[in-house]
Amino acid sequence: MNRAVRRRPALATTALALLCALSLTACTGGPVPATGKARAADPASRPDLKPFYGQRLQWTDCATDGYECARLTVPRDYARPGNGRTFVLPVARAAATGPARRIGSLVYNPGGPGAGGAGSLEEGMDESFGAAVRARFDIVSFDPRGVGGSVPALTCEPTEAEAEAEAAEAEAEETSEEASDAVAPLYPRTEADRSAAASGARTAAEDCEEHSGPILRHVGTEDAARDLDVLRAALGERELTYLGWSYGTSLGTSYAEQFPRRVRAMVLDGAIDPSLDWRQRVISQSAGFRRSVDDYAEQCAEIAGDSCPGASPQEIRALIERLYQRAEREPLPVAEDSTYAEYGGMDATAVLDAVSMAMYTPEDQWEPLSEALREADQGDATKLGALDDEEETEEGTEDPGTAEEEQEEQREQKEQEEDETPEPPADNGDAALTAVNCLDVPHPRSLSPYWDALAPADQAAGVYGTAGVTAELTCRDWPSGGRSPHRVEAEGVPPVLVVGTTGDPSTPYAEAVSLAEQFPQGMLLTYEGLGHTAYGRGGACVTAKVDAYLVKRERVRPGATC
Image 1 (cartoon, rainbow, N blue to C red):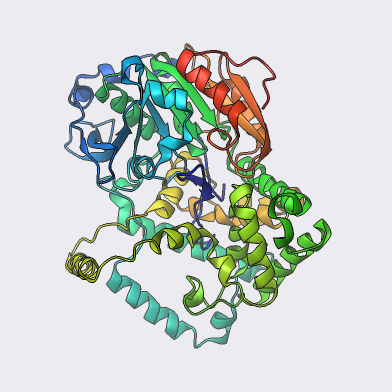
Image 2 (spheres, rainbow, N blue to C red):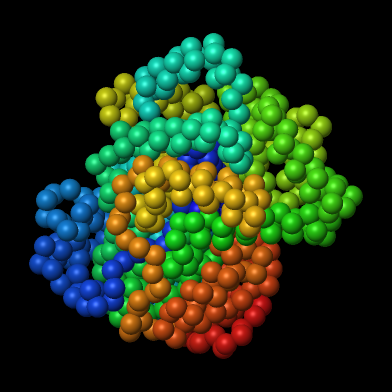
């Protein structure tokens, strides 16, 4: 699918920005392990894995007060764990607030794929958990292999020298009128548009292969779930207590399938259905975004008040459609200091991404979206392009730093530029988003299945569907994990709690219903509301039921609704 989510502190949730669907795609998928029978042997019993399972975490104070940090070493290739090649993963924890009644560790994944868990915890993600859970568990998270502070980490970005060469080449190409006038459409109908889309996707895949080739085949969800079991052992836990948001539900499902008898309790919030193939996933998620934008038009006044960009739902829908059409003809203007200035403004894909991302947390995002849409319609899309940067901008204004600090940052940047093997960017979420999802879900190698999917996607979800199909093209040239969509096979797993939000844009409620049905003794908790995921933002009812399950393993009754 073409979008994914990362969880942020203060109960906020935002999308992982996709500035160009032709170069940064996601095909958000669940794990696709082999059958339960093939998993009968315990992988941890292998002698060559004992060094990894025998490690104990060495905790030290994190840079952020109140948290402890450690490093976990896992094999890069579980088929050959003794070859000396590894990933070293950051781990962080917030100690239980009631140590006298501590049950153990609760591990969470914040979403993505591409969101680092260790950093999210240091930023206050433990506050998303209920007081009862924080009292009884150490809250623990980690950066999955290839993500964030993982060593090695994924990158699809060129070095500075490569970027300069590419910029010079692009500038030369712009002497051609055809090149300078090209704007990516949301629905590529012509042969020229489709050829450009396929070419851009192929270039994106080649960039990732060039810069992260040795690890691309080792960052899938199935391997990350095996890392999760190594973490469980390193924490000294006999069984795993786990909570996964969004993509974290894929990670949890994979763990349950591989290690069903090692699960103590598992909450999967914002569920991804592993039985859907790539095309079904695109239509499911894209239709979810389309419904959410309709919800925005219908309920804007209730949440955003006077800032709504239209006096009626019809006016709001017309404005959004007008912006898409304008941006397809010519990028919408932005200020010189905008992220999109170097691209000549916001094209249609960028506008669609900005609107879609604002659907994740209506309570936080609909008001600034409304103001941004109004200004974009008046000729200035700067605020629309800055929606995803707003939180960082606000945080950055609190402490601009001293001159000495700025000089130190400049010195470190210069040293990195001089290094022959520069580190990946601090936030490599876009690369991980592509790498993990394309590896997890099989995609057609020929182009025709993508073009055949455009009309059904358009019928089901309009431009959200057609843009979603086009975004999948990068996965066509990606190494495949060789697995197939399947229903959950986790015989012996205890009752798993799946939480679904009826108005979820990114992981539609129907997928939560399906996933709960697929688990043996699966339970479904329904949150009747808008936005992505429920625990941590869905109110006291959701918190109470999830906490009671995690702490006491209290079952949720059929039909439970908040």
